[in-house]
Image (cartoon, rainbow over all chains, first blue to last red; front, side):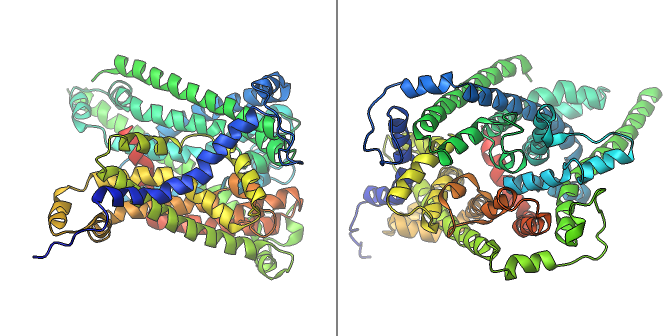
Length: 299
Length: 285
């Protein structure tokens, strides 16, 4: 048997496999992020393509933090993320518990419930904007049929936030359900069976046996949903466009507008780095929280 | 003993009813907006803004769909074409590049390999708005602003971290012995990759492809930052209806249906793979 001497060693070939990956990520992530750091620490202007840029250190960060609109958008994003995550976790847990099982009815139900999260966010927003229209939307019409007066939904500052939370609940609860169904389905059956033999009710089994074992999945779902909601853009863009006024001016949307419509590049760059810092903080806090909860859970 | 048994029976009965009610309510909640979208797309023009809203169109019409594709001013045909091109091309490249990289990461005996892999994974978790604006400036400066190429490259970059992660988990499940006999026969990494690994990891590749395709089809933020006229995609075309064209609910709903129907069909057929892709990372984490 004649052994062919390879042209390139094994390691070299494998290294070559990595070249396309590195090339693409350089262009789509590394260089833009580096440029973003430069933008965040300089006085770059789009009009002269940066010809007059000078280094200004943390000046842009100071300006961003001092901007009341930015601070308000932070508040909006937090409220939205907290509200939507809580509702989605609760609702998702309840529905997921109901919908586990291999019977065709359960699988059909799950297939239906998984659809919303794959619909483009802008279309989701468009649909709900039509449905929650004060005069010609079917929601107010349906409410009227059972005697409830029409609601202002997106058109009033105080109801706009609950309205976009409602949209996100429709949109993202399906993600939580997928995760939790998988989590519940892979729980070890013995503790559950043992408890039922001992005469525990369904609620007791759920509350004291299943729930503690579900904390890992729940915390992953909570993290994904909180971060995801905090960065929301698509459906806000097509429902409220940040309004009325600035009532739903979520941070991503605010930066999107500042950067792509007003070309406030340094502001946007500095602000998005603050956003990343905050996201890291959230991840750290939630991981710590999860470890604390797991210590109290136990088998 | 008897009472415990009867209480359990009672409880199961109540639970069954509660379960049925919950499922029906939530399924209806999920379906109604989609059904409403479809109904709106087949209404007569005067019926859109009627108060009270028209639930069953008197004379369903396909005029909105016709307008979408026959009207010379409509961006729908271009948007559809662009979305298809971008989705297919970006998916092919992200699966190709991602699986090659994942193969390298799982086979390299280099000490820094896990670190590099971890870095790639991390790149999938930061808010893309940070990179969107600089990427736009870069593309603008090299003249690629309103092109599909810029969008495709961005989408490949968007999908790579998750694809690499997915494929690494699948590749790690393939026993090394299968490759060792091929290695003894003088098979290089490329032929091992193509002849052994790819056929075995085909389900994983399917999951990666499906998730990438879906993400490309529905992505809005990056695409809208780059596309102005020529490179418009379906999500952009839908968003334009609300900002530029006011309340033309009919054509807007029709466009929405065009965007949503592939998604629904996809979900029905590949649901298994989607669920697998979503839960793979979450459960192991």
